[in-house]
Length: 321
Image 1 (cartoon, rainbow, N blue to C red):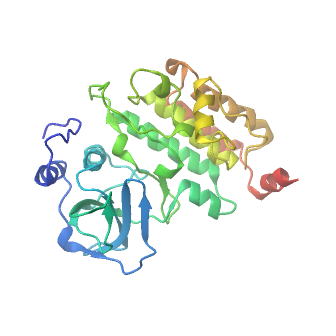
Image 2 (image 1 turned 90 degrees about the vertical axis):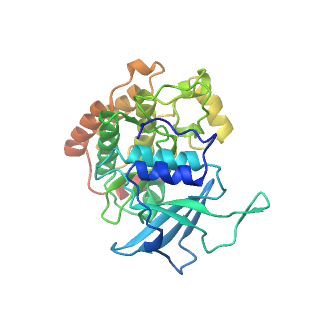
Image 3 (image 1 turned 60 degrees about the horizontal axis):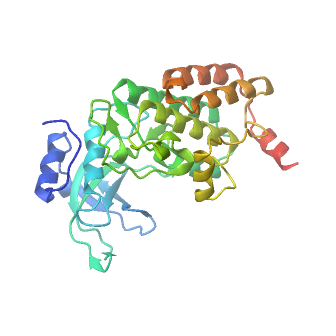
């Protein structure tokens, strides 16, 4: 199959099924059973995620499907187009797709939603932000290394994520990072389309994607976002914490980067400036001046090996004084 960006102008359900099968994603509808636990359903913007089980698979699965009919189908197919090329411990994998009418009787804009296509993946309970909020004495530096290694792997495979943030990073039950959210991803070989509109989340998105003619993502814009995720990990705060979304956009447009935190959780004093200097390099205004994900990973490895403390509660207690 021609490996090109998805165009849904003429797309119908059968076209979508054909595209998914062409990317090696099989129809597992007959194997799926929905869970009876109504709490295991997440309403996430344009998509819903519901728990189920899959015959022949050990453990629960997540089914991500569009909460409208053909709307957003393009991004679901694009996720499979991208992920089908990847195989890495720190990147989500798909178990197949389903054609389904979920249990809940839903409406979208007053119209009852009919059949939907859902992507099936292993169920993971917490994203990175939730994980940071619910756990104590977590190994933040190890997580940062894993995120950087995953982005390095994507870039080496010719994949640009385009929407890296804490909510697109899941943490498995084994404590491993899993990068998700490939709906806005592109391949390095894709021809940039100036007409294509990407939904961006201000706090993590590179400055040039706001003020340039095209919002097309690049490896360099991924590195900017990687820096924001690392900042969030070690400060326990979202980037531009305390500012509204509109204020954050204004700050980014005016060339402002986040303020340096008073401390970096679990990092020895002598290594905090090393870490901050690395983050500043990730946020260079000129994308060409930013380091590669490989360089970021290498610096984090050194910090992880030599510059971490055991008990993060020391830092959190200091912040409260």
